[in-house]
Image 1 (spheres, one colour):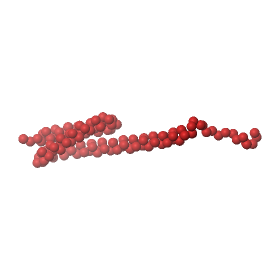
Image 2 (cartoon, one colour; image 1 turned 90 degrees about the vertical axis):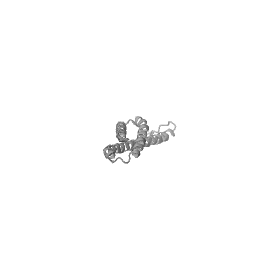
Image 3 (cartoon, one colour; image 1 turned 30 degrees about the vertical axis):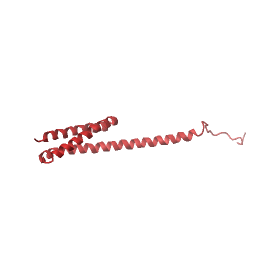
Length: 125
C-alpha cells in the first residue's frame, strides 16, 4: 500500500510549520521561534523517513517539488532574519562594552569632578 497521500500531507504540515516559523521570525518573536524549532526538526525527520520509503513514487515527488521549494525558501528567509537579529545583538553588545569602558574610566576618578579653575596667577587678581 502506498504512503504517497500521507507523504504529501506530512509535507504540507511541514510547510505550515515553516510558515509559522517565518511569521515568528518576521515579528521578532525569537523565544517562540526557538520553541517551534524542536517540532520542526521532528517533522523534517518524519518527512525524510517517509520520502526514503516512497523513493520510487516519481509522480508524488513531482507534486511535492513546489511544496519543498516553498519550504526551502521559507528556511532561507528565516536564516536571513536570524542573521539580521544576530548582527543587531552583536551591535548592542558592542555598544554595551563601550558604555562599560566609559563608566569604568569615569569611575576611576573617584567621584571627582574636573572643572577648570581660575588660575591664581591670572592677570588682574
